[in-house]
Length: 277
Image 1: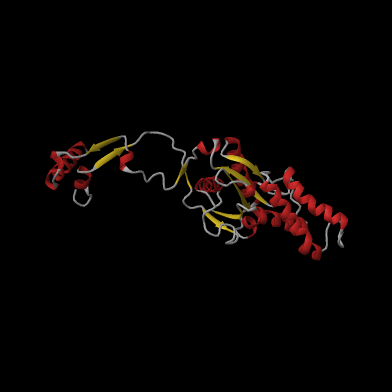
Image 2: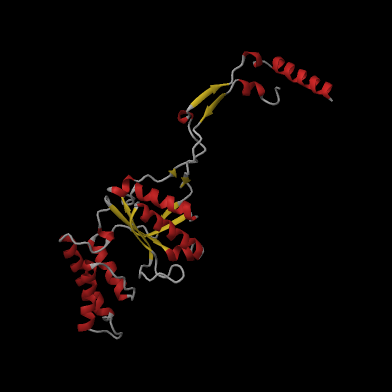
């Protein structure tokens, strides 16, 4: 009895919990990283709600590292990014306001064509075209128009890009895993957790034709979507606190509080079994 620790058992306390399916997903092992330090230099842009959504999606899809390639961009940075993308041939299409910014490049290439059709020269891009696109972007944003979701007030809706290329090349995730991550994001959009989701260009078979270089999600921070609770466990669901218990039962029994008392029970039981044989 002493070796088996039965005295401790007989003086222990049992906690009873509701027999419910919790369907909790632990995001504790999911790591969120940035492609470069300029994305969130002061670590104050990425919202807690967005972190929970990313960890939940990563846990469901089996993706343990999520590399963020873009968050909020002020108008100057957004205009410069659009200019660099357009000049490099990565021609991402936007809504009406964003199209106006891209049209600055298109018009300039028509009036001052470079060596390649549809492009201005590198020199003109550096000295004129890029600055004109940044100026146009600032004007539209100041007028309250949405050039890009990345320019939005991230306290309301936060736009995030997750690099599909880095997931595949650096972290060696398979195409099937990336498709599964996309399916999770799509599910979250359908549930109202995300305002929008755009798959990376070429994902799946046949490949998605989006022109988007990353997994682009828009997370509701405030508003209807923010009220939806994610079944996310920040720690192991099994490690529940005793204060969460519905019932408590003490095992204390005055007849089994000493080793001799327990030995007597086991001796009697052993003799009884011997007689049965």
